[in-house]
Length: 430
Image 1 (cartoon, rainbow, N blue to C red):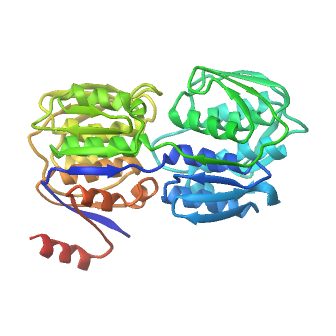
Image 2: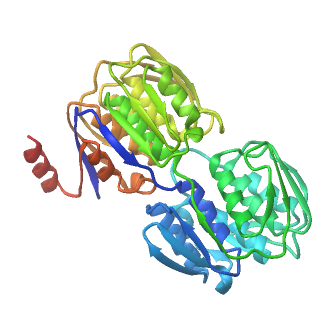
Image 3: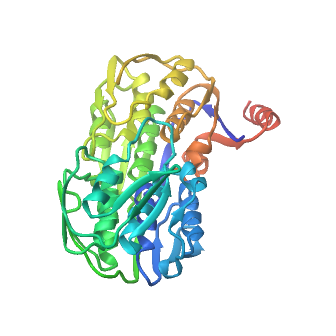
């Protein structure tokens, strides 16, 4: 098993280029199979989740041509199988997007019940409610969701809760339904808007993405397109908080600052200097930061995917902070690991009270999920001494060249896979 080994204590300084948004890319790759012509997708992040999704798409017969690390051409014209194996689903939950795409185009889909990061229950009842509202018969049998319809009919749908996954999945199915679909209480995240824009570039008729109401007039077919995925706001935010934790000066390049409003607001609250440019954001942290209150909410609120990163920074800040997690109930698992590094945190239900400490002590910790893993690396970078982070397979699911990018900012971090390599690193860095 691979680990990251980190010698902390250096402020991170410099510029870092942000890749394409993983969460947008997963929806866009699924939607690409709905056209009968080749679709070119650019600014694709080269991370494990994306590679698994491409394997799943190839597995049902679509043509997948990897042009380079960040560009792929997909043609859904050759699909002959409407069943997605459990092998793909257990690796990445988002392969359930193929349900909406296949149902929309072929009026039939079979997808195994999903897996993914262990951060709490993420029910799919709203997805199924949406498919049924469009006229599909949906059953769960032998661990699979089976959806089929003679035809899909436009409908008026109100989601019981705001859900990104169901908004994207039902939007894809409705894009090729007969008539008008109105979806209310939808998710407004940037990646929802990006999937809608991509579908429109293939000839779909979707209006209102990014607001509470999305209107979709179904079309008979979708055509070829070329599309570039938006930058990843969570990757950007991770490096911004890494600058804050290490008292550094980092500029994230290739971002849409508007997507980072909630993150920027919290960085300013705790005492960072933040400078915004057209497609870049600079974060400078000059001394010890101060406490704040955080509550995770659907976009445009503070993102749950940025909660562990701010948790690390607040554990080093002056005063008492609280974090309320309102999206995923298991998102606090990283706090046990942080406590091993000397953090002073008390968790009650969905709320954590954090008493800031002057500094962490280096320790061996384990990544419980994708974002928590990145946050523990930030903690290691902010700590004198040598920290080892186990289970980094989670981190590689969603961050491209993570250790290389941190090294380019002056971080001392290496990927290792044996005790011998750990000892070698320790000798090298003294």
